[in-house]
Amino acid sequence: MKKIMLTTLLLLFVVNIFGQNSDWTTYYENSGFLETPRYNETIEFTKKLAESSDFIEYKSFGTSLQGRDLPLLIIDKNKNFTPESVKKSGNAILLIEACIHPGESEGKDAGLMLIRDLIIHNKYPDLLEHTTILFIPIFNADGHERFSAYNRINQNGPKEMGWRTTASNLNLNRDFLKADAVEMQHWLKLFNEWLPDMFIDIHTTDGADYQYSLTYGMHILGDMNKEQTEWQYNYLAEVENKLLDDDVLMFPYVAFRRWHDPRSGLIRRTASPRYSTGYSAYQNRPALLVETHMLKDYKTRVDATYYLLRHTIEIVDNQHKELKEININADVETRDLAGKEFILNYYTSDKDSSIVKFKGVEYDIVHSDLTDDIWVQFSDKPKDYDLVLFDKLMPASSVKLPQAYIIPIEWTEVISRLDMHGIEYSILKEPKELDIKTYKFSNVSFANYPFEGRQMVQNFNMEEISIKKLFSKGSVIVPTSQRTAKIIAHILEPIGPDSYVRWGFFNAIFERKEYVETYVMEKMAREMINENPELREEYEKAVKENPQYYNNQWVKLFWFFERTPYWDQQKDVYPVGKIYDLEAIK
Image: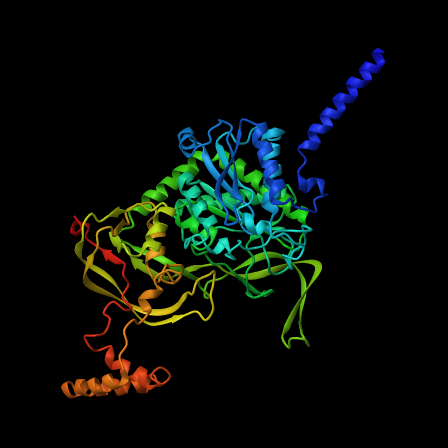
């Protein structure tokens, strides 16, 4: 009898132990490392993590267009789960984001396993002593559920995966500054409430074949604060060295000067604020873009992501005070940008280069009898190359920042974005006429097709003008002496690569709203020439120099219409004003 009882107890113990281990095996692991869980299975596991530990809190930071919660796990060993309490504790905040492109799901599976190992299994007891993790397992929840085996043609696993864009077909990783997607609007609120000390955005790359299982992007080419740039260099060197012990090869994001052709050399650029890393950089926060290599098998990619996250937490833990101080100093430096020159855009010089070692594979370039073009054929044989690298950034456009910008009350869509981006502003309490500087546009051209749901302004010329303008009560004054000055400049300075002028927020100012009949203008044009004979010479010169534009009667007569008092004086004039003397507003 005793033997039976003892055997029963032993069996119960074994079942209990194995049951616990089984319960904490992720869907991905149970699939033999071949599949990634659907939305509901992911949410179930994240909630289970939170319910099983006092160190984890699950919450939704918003709702998708189709009504799905946007999940967030907060992991803190001090049980601090609000921005205020975490910042008061002195912890560094690390934001990790997965599935902004749901077909690229390594971050979700690696993150869930790592949090389990950190908190449930206590596998790395020395980690998270000074770091609070914000983990978004699925950012694009609706796109995640457009599940199929055919969503990533270039990619080696998982068996099925989500779709790249949201339910409204917007790419969230083009939306950080313009913030059209409701999901992005929720994300911006989260980002600016917590203001993380470092941000990691996890993707799977497309492109050429090579030996690296993990590539990255980081703003280390000189467009960030000097201290932040140095810290990021040191971080990358340390994490790359640690990954070697895990047999993981890491290299900067691979972009060849000629698509797919390593021998053409490598080129590196900086990201504009439409992208995750660009946005974070202009918010004065280091950001790491993770791009695992799509041709490696899924387990290799998930493992590489897991190790990278684990090592990053260790580095942030050890350097939390330094990282937080560097970020604060960058904010202080940014508040002092008013009246100074600020570079809005860069290009990579083609005159300065160096040689780098690159672990590629053997390949041939042959002629295609199908397309009558080149066909790059990669082999499975590793080959190391000495490649030319171009990575020196040069200023492409810059602007002297005013003391403040003023946005008329009627431009509500623009004003609504200020709160989303954590931008401080004040509101005119009564109408006021102000002397401002602004821009007059000419030669404006638009893209031939929509991009991310908008008709972008492709090219324009502009000149700065000084005018006196009456601003209505409720107009918004945006001072540049604040930590978000770089974001403000990128939104409101038209020449910025992702300015709201370029994104089409102000397209209405380029539309003509009043017209004139040809028989009326024919008579008036002759009267104008009689009063000013030189006008005819100017007119004939314009027609001769621009025959493709002045190609019909209406356009020719509108040349005269533009020079009458009846012409709309607000057309092509930027409604946002630049104020260089804040005393004028008081």
